[in-house]
Image (cartoon, rainbow, N blue to C red; front, side):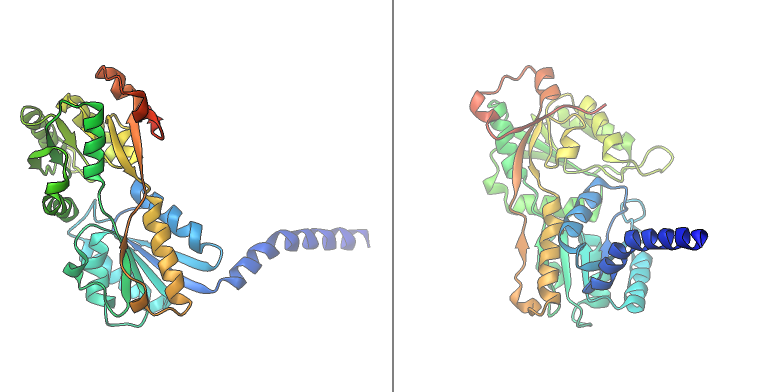
Length: 333
């Protein structure tokens, strides 16, 4: 009898711990498929995922698919077909597609105006009409790089700067960002001197030396995917410090995690905004609002960041007013 009672207690305790998880699964209202252009090791992707889950995790089952096109762009279309096969198998109630490659390779060929499933994009740098957005079942949030604001902030720290260079890993997204720059060039506080798109770390070093003689500061949105001598893709953490040391002048960015790799400053995007905005838009669509009534939007949030390590290295002494509402960080080892 005692053995039976003990067994009953164990079963009861097990159910007590399991039931909340089972209840959460049972109350999930929607199934959502998230297709990421890049891999799970990319910090931007991790932040977008955090934003998505902050909105959807309580009410949705979320499945992620990573196209990993920063490491293998050529394999992107095949990965997109695999994502579409997963879509057909799982029949989700909604889809989120992050960054440009997921649009051109996955959404446009397979989902746009072809299915009734609502699709929300995020992290898109190209003009939306390039993909035929908005579409009958597609809307989302554009990613607009805060270059003008970041350069204006840099000029407040160093009033003497008048020219900047632009560098990012050679990719369709990197080049589309430059096209956006050129459309908005009249708003820039300083002049664009030159742009470079290295594919390898060796090219990045060489181009950084060249740009150092052509401009006062360098703007770098990301170097994720740059190859080493063996063709292995590298991370921002591996590449950005090399650029900072080679350029030997202030480098500016627009993401906090990249600024911490040795850059001076930037007006940092709130990366999670891309994820939670797309998630809110998708939840609204899955709850019955027609996609046509959910307009395309763009990121709104930004925060000034100064890397104190770099600031001290350049001997910069900012006016106290510039430190108000500014987040101070240090270079990570």
